Length: 226
Figure 1 (cartoon, helix red, strand yellow):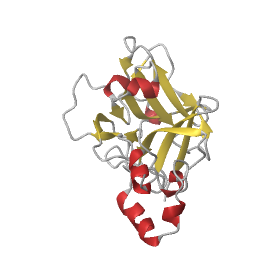
Figure 2: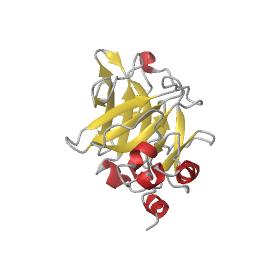
Figure 3: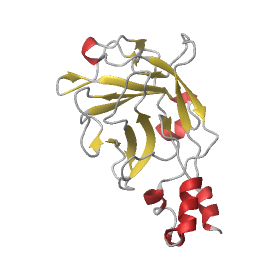
Figure 4: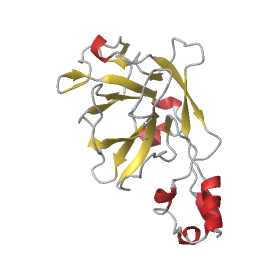
């Protein structure tokens, strides 16, 4: 098989976030920046006494193959510390939290507490990107022997011309790293990017990446920026 056909064979579709730009409905369950569903009997998520900022709420049935990605959970929420992002790769609960609900009947739309209310909330629509994601140069070596391309300038140029990945908020596909990829011990699940509408800036126009560990099956966060 031609090496470029090999690369094409590992391309993945991704669910990309359309944030706002449409009229919100009472049935909207996917949100960026707030308007989260919470259990009225539970306290707002916090870390070391600091209330966490609501980033993204995902209604799993709206995601293609969502049950494969998130198991039997119905709702997934991601929160971060407003004062600092974790350094390096951090496990769930260490400066950030991912929260899962298998049943949402008891949940109620909850106003974000003032200390954590720093983003504008927008409903989200998830859409399948028709253009496939492909791994970056460094990550490609984990899947394919790239020596042939590495040793040929013309093939090298062709690789960077033809193979890219969606760079904004998405579920699935390949991480759109700004710096170098992390260990393949971690399975990439979703990306939350700096987004203008809600007012989220991650470092200098950076991204947050959420993974599941192939070793301990726990959830981890990493981020990078320019």
